[in-house]
Length: 153
Image 1 (cartoon, rainbow, N blue to C red):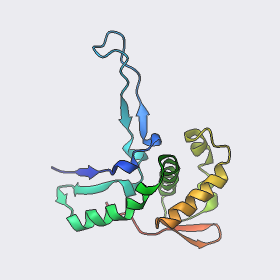
Image 2 (cartoon, rainbow, N blue to C red):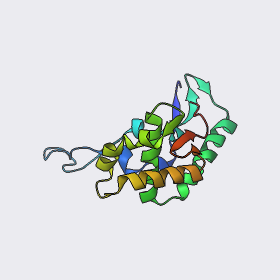
Image 3 (cartoon, helix red, strand yellow):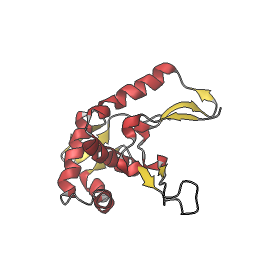
Image 4 (cartoon, rainbow, N blue to C red):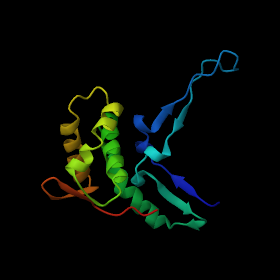
């Protein structure tokens, strides 16, 4: 085995599931609808590497990674979807330190993912606070944030 990845169930939110077209009328299971799991939409914290390029990670390190993410499981599904989408956006920035304005750059994408929310900017600020409270982020000064720890593959 070269690579093995574990994704805790609480990382499977609506934005990581892509609905497929229903099977055609000639199919044995006509009308059945499947889905794809978009691994690229899961933030790094949700990808627990058990084996990487043939290297087996220690049970201790995998458990430590899981324990850091476990507080997310206590959030309701609706809140957790937003929280994980914002965390994914933070990682898309590609740096450990970032500003609120950087995150606002993803406003249109988050509006598309959450079309019923008409207050995207306040929701972003709220979710950054949730991520701070859960230990994923630190506020360094007004409008500036940093990841609390670097993700290791």
